[in-house]
Image (cartoon, rainbow, N blue to C red; front, side):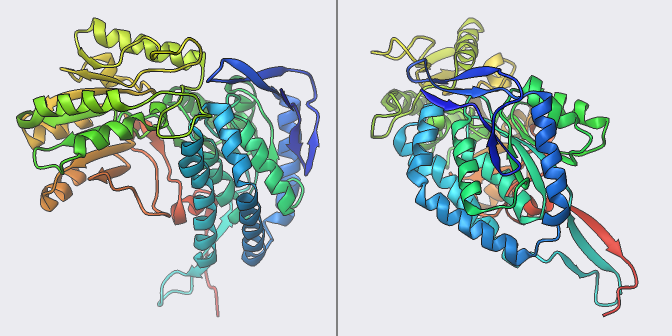
Length: 477
């Protein structure tokens, strides 16, 4: 049992101001594996005070100083890479290979890319060749960073690293369900030698530390990744202080599979949804299939789902692990049952535990067919390994169904017709369109339309989120 009760404030690991212990549960076994503390308003205030004090000097640091520290952090991350793999597997039940190849790799990738973008970024520039106005980019100040449990180090790196890079200071509140990777990252930051107060970590839940952060008068920006429901609460709480709020929220991605799609389009779509146990906000959880290939697609989808193994995080090989918690497990099982009750056809999976499992939050890869877009399973973000298949006849019908949602994070389409791909991509309402299963290049922006959030993470766009823009007139060279 790991003792992780301390917070990282002003360059030191310190005890919480008052005892408020919480067990971190291994979702594979339902057993506690660590104890953390849930912070109080006093802990949040201490961290914000340290960050505010540190900002006065850190904002004056040179780009070269910040690059050097981030490069040192990258070296330490690589050295302690396997520790991060183990932490993520333990806290969220990610299979070891997935934790290694995808989850932990994402943190390294973001570090590497932000270092590259920072080296190229100009913090002030001439407005135009005819103007003597100067455009200056300056750090916004103290940042409150609230990260989720489903992609822990991925989201931490997407927030902490650009805040560092732009000269901001910060307080990080990771998810209380998966805090171990964040605390390990704090150890790496400490080892790299960032000045005291630049980075602070306080564990807590959304109602406690999360609320304290979003409403704090000395925090200039809140960046949050999580549910749309929580994003609304954060926006309301932050409104009183008019701070910048950057949100990356839920999704209900549509994946249009046209009759002229490549041969493995359906099977790849199933694997995409089921990876990370379905716990990805941009997962394509609604598959729209052209009617001429619908029956074939149903057979392929069910067969592929049945081929996916479900097992413990410690097992090697290609399989999915559990979902994060009892709360999430119960929600997913309830939604699977609602699909059955509303008349959708259960083609694979179901609400029962996988064969051989009697403990852990494991969900069978589940496929529903004959789904209509007004069913709960088609409208609500399930956040588990559950896919709905919806038939369509025309291109316009497919686009209308995909866009008929409050979300707009990631949509997908499969076709070998290049012109159709361009035409449909422009009509889909989402922050990213994945064409033919191809992922985005490093440094491209990620974020949502509509109730999937605002702002962008990654690359130059990720740096700009943490900067204020100032115009200076009569700047003579």
